[in-house]
Image (cartoon, rainbow, N blue to C red; front, side):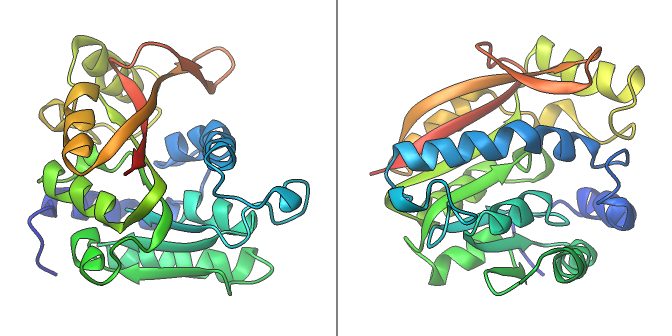
Length: 251
């Protein structure tokens, strides 16, 4: 697979961890933990943007008929959660072993897989035939693992319909980003394996926002995230200098 956004070293690293993806204490622990606040946040945001149906709010499928693209889905942790809520989900990844892990877990865990589909494809290729096809696009800690952030984010934005939302979470290239994104989690608390992140690949909130603005996406809000080492969970903060999520509306 050829794509300017693909980083071979990152692919090899994630391929190595693929079979441990659904281990809640394994190398993808951060994704399992952050999911607990990410999924409710996205659901609430979709409701505020009137992208969900009000009469389904208290049903078992509150996101029914909402089309979501998970651009860099890995082994399916986030994609599967949205499918459980009734959304029609497409998960993309460029690592074949992770796509297989995602498919296998969905088939054994979900009651039905009719509303979830995993594709071995880069988002820039997917965007060519899926322009404006989704109510929401999720990029959950993908940006810091790819080569060409601008191409990737603009492809994500291309897939969102006007009035739809894009959510991008990543780590800022700041002293706090270095401390909280590499030094402490990799070398002190062992939240993920050493060497999982490179400081040079971190992207500041303002730079992510600028790219999305250029792709006709207007910022709705930005939030910071912080890990509580006592409670071992994530919570929202106002500071977006380290871990953050930006929510943007496609014009």
